[in-house]
Length: 160
Image 1 (cartoon, rainbow, N blue to C red):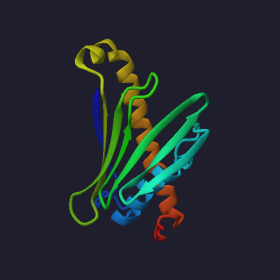
Image 2 (image 1 turned 90 degrees about the vertical axis):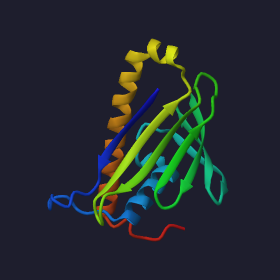
Image 3 (image 1 turned 180 degrees about the horizontal axis):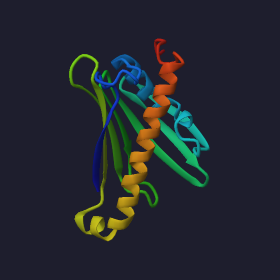
Image 4 (image 1 turned 30 degrees about the vertical axis):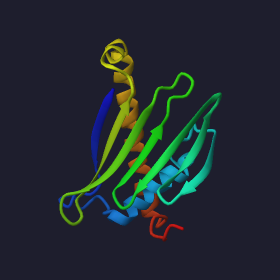
């Protein structure tokens, strides 16, 4: 399954929406990777493991389900989450890319991909429609939380 969608962050034609800078957006997306409990309330536990110059490994626990992934940080525009096949979970990835169309017109492109083949995709079509909808709602929530954090000034500080 491949799925992608775009969320507009800043609309220069809409003065009712507070503008978020590219740097604030980047910090917010990194915060989502490092502190996912701020964005995913049903996440029970997260452990950040080995760090490298390009990212880090994580272990997340949702009840009995444990997911290990690698977060790849490609400053200043892209964050990739890579999940290797584990147990009943197939290999998958999520890429978030900041796109700009002019000075302050920012978007985030969310791209999901899993290792299912065309036959498996056909067999899982109804389930995949549900997953696409859940992914999109989760991504909208991510941007909502980022807006709240930016409004509180929590994305203005330099990341360490």
